[in-house]
Length: 77
Image (cartoon, rainbow, N blue to C red; front, side, top):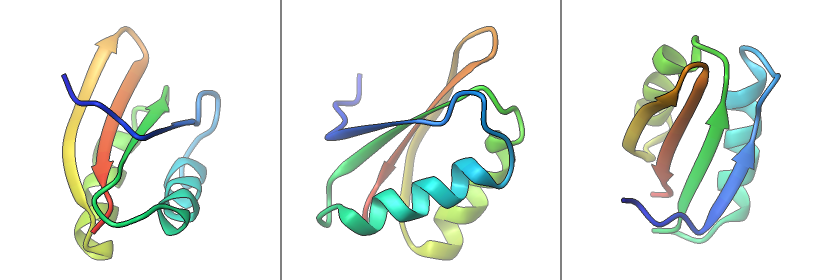
């Protein structure tokens, strides 16, 4: 189980808003802190890994915990 420093709720929001909000929140965080992103947008399963790679942040995990709920854990670089 990953312990997040902050949680970002993007439920009900669709591409590209969850990634934009993640980018903004990560900029407010300190290096090595972990952000948990909650999403119900299936597109985030493709979008978040691409954003992490392009931004240099680390995708720790991406899990669909139940039907329609996705949790993503990102460590700030």
